[in-house]
Image 1 (cartoon, rainbow, N blue to C red):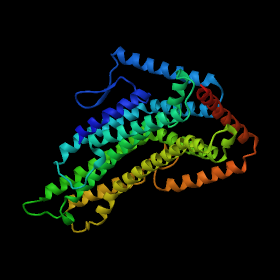
Image 2 (image 1 turned 180 degrees about the vertical axis):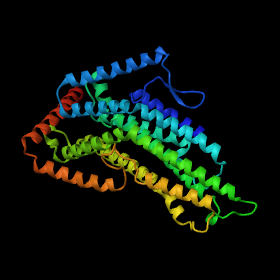
Image 3 (image 1 turned 120 degrees about the vertical axis):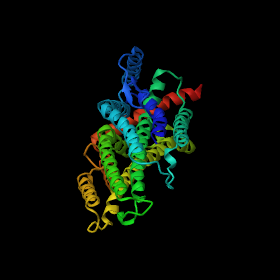
Length: 406
């Protein structure tokens, strides 16, 4: 399990380092842990170079003209970078804790082959996911480039496509968060499977289970479950801020995109109906992308909570009155331990929990927000925002018309 995790972790780390969520100097050592190499000037050079490139691209977009959507894209990008760096030490602790947990599990419990298939844990399948998302991202950008080809490809155009939809930050944050959610959920499921290996009623079975083996097995499962609950807390510390950004900015982005699409009058741009469809497709694909990303994280988080609390149902089915004292003691200790961590859920640093209830909250807020936008469509602030966004679209349209005339 540990080897598979470290192997599939490498491309995730590369994505985080390229974007700036993690320092380049963190490397996987021979013992498997992620350690910061402070003696290499090469990593420091890469850090400075990446930051200079990002700042340069930001300045180019900002100085080109003041458009609200462009400023929103820049803010969204830099909030991801800042949130990632603020939580960096907790992210590293999370990774190292998972690696140490796998080592401890190998020491405490014997290897057992379970029947449940974990498709998402395979290195090959993770590579398929990463490659598919990369192809989709490139295809999205190429489609936009062909739908609205600029006069020339310069640093401004490249920066706009890098910072703009479908947002490379969304891909990196989503795939990173989803990766850790799947791995944490799998480890909770593994603990549940180990519990199922115990004999019915926790009664010793001749030539299969001795009394001491049952006591030791329960204690090991209890220790591992407690450690995994701590790892879940580390995930909240490491990615809670990014999750807050992810859901808040996606909500705002979806609401703005939907409003602009239903209100935008393409006749002002003097384009044919077929061109309207061609140019609006990326926006609809982006809306679908937002829904898929948010739903995937919510479902994965909900499954973790379900698997985490599954052990409670196992314990409640046991009649402990007739059990030996040492087994009874372990069960009671386990129940006390679970009562302390029972309400610990994946959350956006405490602002809201990431579970299925969040779907209803988002839908209600989304409908309310869009209706409010439509009711206030003649308000000066809304009109100013819409007209500014329209100017941004016309700016790109002028570039397109210039290219077409050539």
